[in-house]
Image (cartoon, rainbow over all chains, first blue to last red; front, top):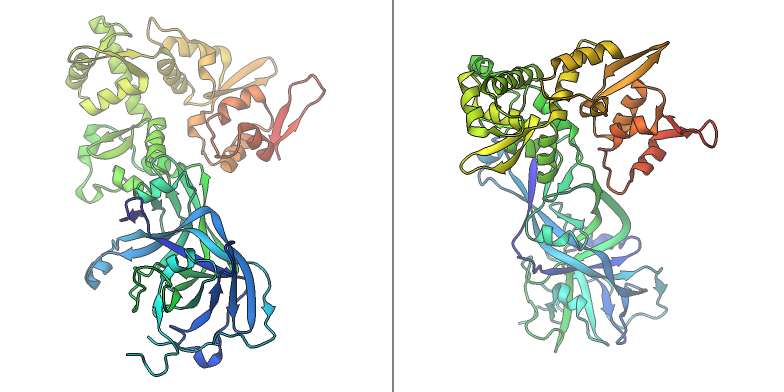
Length: 130
Length: 395
């Protein structure tokens, strides 16, 4: 089987990015089944340096913008064959399409610092409008 | 109009909002309306050097269901390894992709708050490691049905037609190698494309046509170094050999010299012809050196000369008392997988001196490893004394 990697961007790919934190962000049980649109946290760039804070609930993380040593391409699996019949017919053609490229990420590699007072922003998970 | 429960209006800035934050700015990071597992999205780490190949559609994943996928460029093969992470990797697409309401227009963050939405939490990414092509399968495929002769081919019944035959398109689907490596592999196997299928030609059939060619050279008083392609083809055709096969014979046992006006001129290579006959002599099993040499010389066409050096990587010699025995052991019959290669080598002979071993491993190529690295990894090196030749045995 051969899966060609297609790219419609002709060398100029849409740039995606990554916000990376240690561990796992858990959504409060009340929102478990509907966390689309839910705010995860507030990302701030306090100064002209490439230092960032990320406030999630009562926790504050400090990190920085780092270029990736090797870029990441975002691939999307595309299955060709418009009808079910075509898909059944032995040769289900699968292609991978480059939909974006990631060159930089905001990385928070430290443990979170607990905020003593309630943060000013309403970062406790709430549903924002759609 | 704002909805009642909406604390403030947010516009979607996507990845650009994260990457282009002004000093003092803040943005809300939220789950995308289409947030989900998105198993169809994956991350592939690509070297800057390889990136143009990926962006200009010159790469493909190759492999059968049961094989680990490899990524092939025009000329190289890479293993694809999934590397997981325990971090939470929030993937933020540009606001233009993945339909979302309320995109920020114009200058980001001017008046009103900006949001960047996370589409997926990536579990890790795929990394690429350059590897040697998994080319051994090519030989197995082509050996399923060697080309015997046009008569045998014609005689095949209808239902069998196509079984065990592979065209370029089939090979690309089945062999984990880049196009260039695959072409090289076909060349090393002396494969020939006949009626759209890549074939190896049965050794006895090759022997038949070579003998016919040599016979015609004598008959027509041609020179080994100046064989006129069209004349050769014409004569062999009358002897019942197809043009494909005749040309293949010239390629296997010779090379094109200057292309004459209208027709190419070929030169037969003494070594290739002699090695063919040495193999033939040893097909029945090992022989005493004297007997072997005598029989070999007898088979060689007049005007050609044998030398034992020609058989490097083709035969092994063994001392029994005062007799030296010669047996066939061709490097071309060995797998390219280094583990398998060394296993077979040490099974054939427990101890090797470097000069004997060298012809049997010099064609191995493992990206990132030199021949010395391979010896270190797969052999044990011993030296009886400081000045004596090192001997290699199995680890």
